[in-house]
Structure formats: C-alpha cells, structure tokens
Length: 401
Image (cartoon, rainbow, N blue to C red; front, side):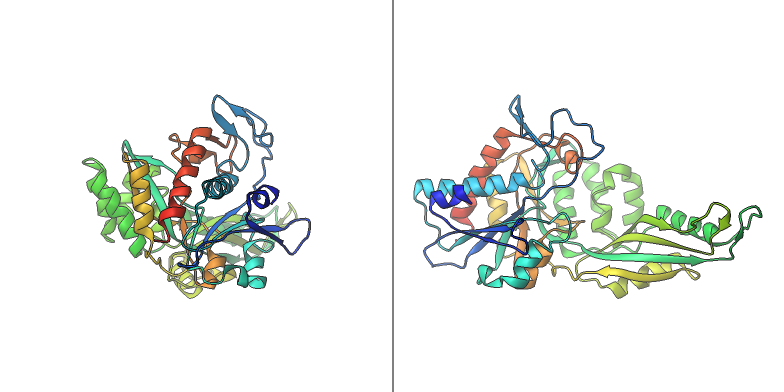
C-alpha cells in the first residue's frame, strides 16, 4: 500500500478482519473506456513436510532465480501487476479507463476473507468492470518439443460429493464377505478404472485444435482424435501421463480423497462414507453429477452433494485476441491457446459481478517449473518476472483499445 500510494495511486484496505485486509488500488484513466481489473492473491499454501533447497520464506535470489513459496502462485502475479502500474506512473501513461488492482487474502481456502468478501460487501469498487486479468494461465508449457502459452478463459466448478455404502456389521474375529468394506473397494476400483462421460466444450475444442495444428506428426494427429467422443477415452489411455492435464477438461470428474468408517479394530463397520472432490465443466449442474456418477457406480451406493458452487459461464472471448497478439509479439516461438482450468480460482467470485476473467500471468518459464506450484522448491527466474512486467505494461496500453 505504501509503495503504491507513494507512486500516486489511490489505495484502500478493505477486509472482514483488520489484521488481514485486501488491497484495492486504482490507476486513474481518461474515462474513455470501462475499467479493467488486475487480480491476484497473496496467501500461500503450507510448506509442511517439504524439503526445500533454499528457505521458502526468505525470498533468496540464487543464480538469477527467486526461490520461495508463492513465487508462482500467486505473489509472482502481484509482482507483475505492481511493477506494471509503477512503470505506468513513472512514464506518465494514462490508460483509456481506470486500472484496478485487487490483492486478496485467501484464494487458497475459499475467498471468504478475500474475493468473496469484496464481491459481497464492496461491489462498488468494481463498478463497470467487464474484463479482468488473473491467475490460471499465461505461463509457458511444453509439449512435443513445442512451447505453448495457455490463456485461461474458463474454469471448472466445485461439486463435492459423498458416497455411502452399507452392509452387515459384526465382530472382527468372524470375517464377513461382500459387506461395506468390500462395496467400498468396488467403488474405488470403478473410480480408478473408469471415467464419467465425455463432454467437449467450446473451450476444450479450441485448445485441442490448437495442439493438433501445432504439434508434429504423429502426435498432433493423435491429439486431434480426442475431439471424437467415440475415441476420446481410448486416446487418453494411449497418452498415459501425458493426458493428465487433458482428461479433466473433457469430463466431469471426482477424485476420492477421504474415507470414514470403523472406529474400533474389532468391529466390522456397517456404514462407510467416501468423500470425493468433484469438479464440473462449465454449463453442468449438480444434477448432472448425481446422474452421471450414479450411472457409473450403480445401485447400492447412496450419493449426496456436500458442497456446490455455480461456476462462471462458458467463456466470453471478446478480448482474448488482444492477449493472443501480445503473447505472439513477446515470444514468437510460443503459441497461445485458450485454456479451460481444471481447478477453481477467484474468477468464480468475480463472475457474479458479470466479469470475464482471463488467466494471463505472462512468464517464460523453464520446462517443469509448474510442477513446483504447491510443492517444494517453488521458484521463478528474475528475468521472467522482469519480462513479464513489460508484457503486463503492454497489456495496459493495448487491452482497453
């Protein structure tokens, strides 16, 4: 806040908890275009039980690389945005419309203190904003020897599920077959071996078409077959681990994560619950999840939705071409492509104000860098931050037209 105020921006600190406020800064424009929002979060996940090469909270720069938790997710984004705003003030650039920066405090949990709080309690801070820039894309990724820049234009939404199985309980000294434990094993086996039905959304179609057209033969041809629903799952099986990022954008998904059952070693439980992290594609509802998962698991499994959030609608591509052009100029060797994020970001909260969020954090990263997000040794090259700041500054000059 002090840095931005000293540079001449208007700054407010707003929060549910005075000890944990969100920052809203505004670079005044000429009033000729609607404002845009730059949004990121400053909270981070734990480093517990992780072995780091350099301390995760000291921000050490070693051989031109900045090491630390949040370097990529998501303090790096805030660094790009703040740097670009300071550059604009330094050079006397006045954008066509206001540029609003929101640095929020709990995206990694649920937004209760951050984006959700701001949208629910201070929507006036974002009046007139139609387009926003945030996390979820813009990083360089590599496939088939080619470099791509996914730009997040849509994301899945949460539909957490619980499956309950029942059986006959009894004394642990007298084994029982086919009861709750066995039924749970069947459920887990099905979830491990089978998928929910294939759905090819417009964003997924554009992404896969871009890969097909830019990857060498035969990889491009194989990827292209994902667009045939009769072949999608077979191709994913052939691709193996290469398909880990493609599978969730072509299906609604559930991942089993928590099992609750017996409480004593000598008592066979009669009821066991399985909690699952469920994610829905844009345009699908909790009723779709119940129907698809019920058909997959069959009779004898009780299903319920434990948490559901409406997600953003299918993408508004109105300004995507500007971001595509900016990336193309900054790195002619990279290919931009629209991206459907398998997780969720604060975009879902801002979508309730009618905003389209584009995931666009332009960082030219070495291959494998994204594997360090939420893991040990998260880091970012200093040059990538410097170059990314320049790209965001270009965005300020071109995005609003």
